[in-house]
Each structure stands twice: as C-alpha cells, then as structure tokens.
Amino acid sequence: MQHELYANPSSRTRRSFPFIVVMQSDIVDTETRLVAPLGLNVPPLAGTPNRALPAVRHEGADYIVAPPHFGTLMNLHLRRPLGSLREFRDDLTRALDWIFFGI
Image 1 (tube, rainbow, N blue to C red):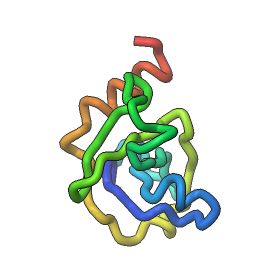
Image 2 (image 1 turned 135 degrees about the horizontal axis):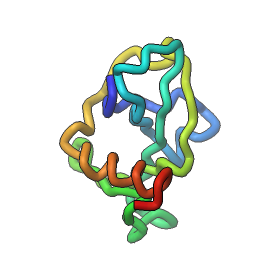
Image 3 (image 1 turned 90 degrees about the horizontal axis):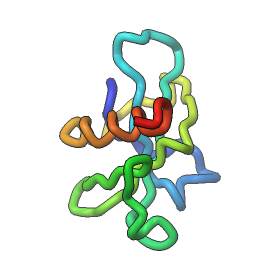
Image 4 (image 1 turned 180 degrees about the horizontal axis):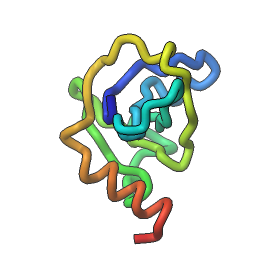
C-alpha cells in the first residue's frame, strides 16, 4: 500500500538506505511498485531535508526520503510492512510535485 515502509531488500544499498517506502498509488495495480529509499538523517544526508528530500521519523530515528533515487520493485519483495509514513503524506506529495512538476 502507498506509504508503507519496508526493509530494503537490496543487500548492495541496505547499509546506506535501510528502508524503502512505496510511493505509488494503490489505484495502479501492477506487479511492481515505485519505491523511494530512506537514509538515516546523518552525514552526508544530515541537514539536507528540502522539498525533494523530505525528513520523516520512524521508531524514534530521523530519516531522509530520497525520491530522486526512485526505483521499482516486484511486489513479491514487499511482504511484511514495518510501518507506515502516511502521517508524512503531504511532505511526500510535495516532494513528488517538486521533482516532476517544479511546483
């Protein structure tokens, strides 16, 4: 579901981006989902939250969502959500608007 948070299934990028969030609307029913990585709000990401890189909080830790690093994942890699970022929906939507439409 949109805005659900998952462990990053990629062993290659998991250290830098431990989580991913589904950005794709639930209306679009495909075998893949558009996802964005989350990195801890520490250098080099620390202090960089902006319109394209919104800051979020999960289980007491601060993260930066990096929509410019979008990717797609097969649904089979998205088995057990670890939480939701629905409370940050407006920030995530603003990031998409900024990236795609410049507004």
